[in-house]
Amino acid sequence: QVQLVESGGGLVQPGGSLRLSCAASRTIIYTMGWYRQAPGKQRELVAVNSGTTTTYAESVKGRFTISRDNAKNTVHLQMNSLKPEDTAVYYCYAFFSVRGYWGQGTQVTVSS
Image 1: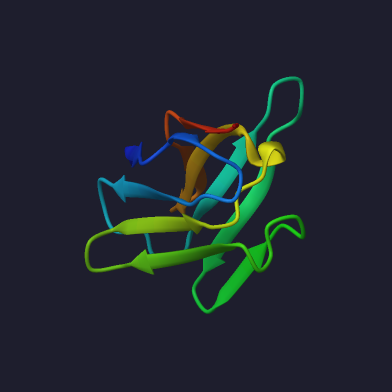
Image 2: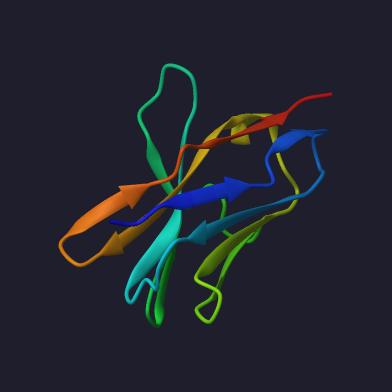
């Protein structure tokens, strides 16, 4: 079992920045990352790191940066130049052993 705890969401104006963090209860050997779900929409990939491979959604490339600290079992998402369409609940994701795990989600709202 793996528990994932997110932090760092909140309300920010368009063009602003936020940094999300996720702490895992045990070492994740392979995949950690972030997904998001806006109201009325399906959950979508934002950024995922699998070892040496990082994948970003086209809509966040150049604005968001994912980073991992494997010694601390954490993953971060630095979000810059935020837009209203980035408003969503952001979920931390980790794949461990034979299954994926989700955090409880943290709300990010981009509004003036």
